[in-house]
Amino acid sequence: MVKVKNVLWDKRDAYEFPMPEFNYYEGEIVYQKWFKTSQIGLTTDKPNFPFRVIEKSNIVEVDDKSVDFSKEVAPVRIQVQGKTGTYTITAGTEVTRCTCPGFSYRGKCRHVEEFEMSLV
Image 1: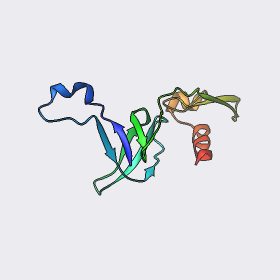
Image 2 (image 1 turned 90 degrees about the vertical axis):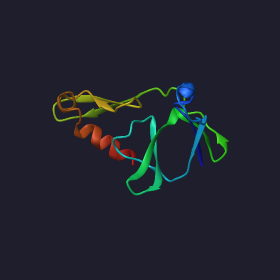
Image 3 (image 1 turned 120 degrees about the vertical axis):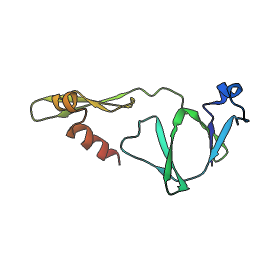
C-alpha cells in the first residue's frame, strides 16, 4: 500500500466535496521508458486505465513505512564514445540528455537508448 499526498489538498477550500489529505493506492510497480526519473507507475485493476503515474516526491509511506523521495539527487554524467567524437550523457534529471548532434536535432539518440537499456 502506498500513501500519497493529495496534490489538491492545498486548494481543498475551492471544492464542494470533501477532499482527503492523502490517497492510498495498491498495485505492482511498473516502468515505462517515457517516465521521468521523478516518477513511478502503479498498476490498477481498470482495463482502460492500466496504471497510474505518481510523482515520487508526493509519496509519504510505502507499506506503513515512512519514505522521503524529496531529496535532490545529483545528476550523473557519463562519457560515451560515438562515431564522430566523445559525448556526455546526463542522467538523474527530468530527462536523460546527450551532447551528440543527433540528440540535439531529434531529442533522442542511440547513446541514450543504450544507456537506458543498460539500466533495465
